[in-house]
Image 1 (cartoon, rainbow, N blue to C red):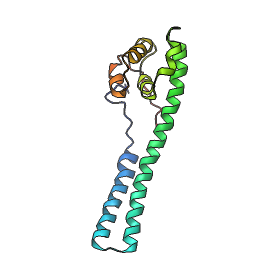
Image 2: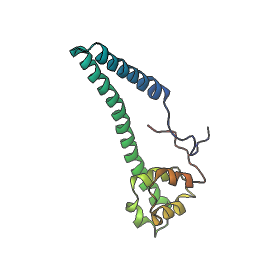
Image 3: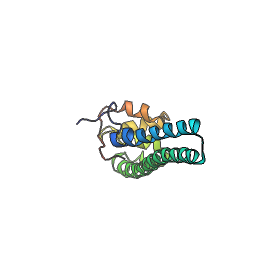
Image 4: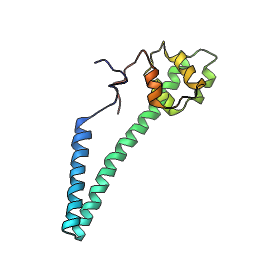
Length: 142
């Protein structure tokens, strides 16, 4: 499958629909029980429903944070190989957002795009990704 800006977002039906859907239904049911049959048990059930949703959301955030750290390292190494000598000292200037977005740029396109991103102080992931003409797919994502 060809990957591009339009279809690069990772969607896992079992997680995004299954897990989050069931947790949302459970939250709704727990709210209903608190409103219509208030008891200590219904309040505890509501608190657990809230915790389950928070747990699912935070586990996703934690995984994405680790992924961004790995991408940061990978991109710094890649840039050491691909950027011209005069650009290499600027590698520490790149933010995580810039590096995460630039990972989709092809090797041929990366040096000029990296320079543009730094010179114009672009930091929005979507803006940078939309500038990529030769998309390098990344199928190993959290």
